[in-house]
Image (spheres, helix red, strand yellow):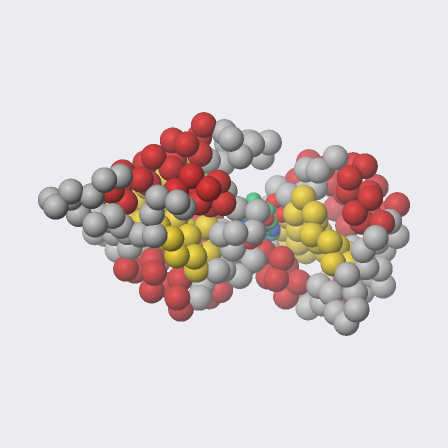
Length: 246
Ligand SMILES: C[S@@+](CC[C@H](N)C(=O)[O-])C[C@H]1O[C@@H](n2cnc3c(N)ncnc32)[C@H](O)[C@@H]1O
């Protein structure tokens, strides 16, 4: 955008990690950046529901403009989805008007987050600042008090949504694994972990840091007719220490 003498200087785009659920895992910097921003934008379902908003609610002020970004309608959404173009343009309108925008992101903004696709669209046009957040991976490990990986161990972090053959190839090589986006892919996840020798002691952590947090051994989750929700991480290691801790 060309800046004319009368136009305000563009605002800054902030990607702010707000952690996985417990507001106590907000960083001091996240609280400050959120407090300073004129506009708080958040990924939401088409019904306006937002996990990120729930985490920061107590820190918002009435004068701040809240902008839901309807980005969470399908886990199968691709990075070129027009919903990201529309969300980026809404944010750009506020930035062009000179308002700083904090996009609050559940967990860390640059780890499997929809903020990445907003950054791709807006990053070259506006000043950007990222505030890292506590990822669900770290919080899930903390909830079961087990190491994610240590020493010479290798760690693979994989989305359960990836094709089964690809997951099998990656997991065959690793000593420890974190599986994201589990939900309806639980059966596939269990098969690839078993084939890789990682299923013993694997644990499912659902909605960590929320009042309805649940920790279950993978075997128990598999036996449930309704499986596990999307907001579940599976932690697995070759020595299977997870189950004992859970
Ligand atoms: C799109 S990714 C976002 C990850 C996020 N940026 C982070 O750093 O944790 C969504 C996946 O993260 C995991 N996740 C996010 N929040 C969670 C929570 N509170 N409890 C368990 N898993 C969670 C789940 O595997 C979910 O499917």
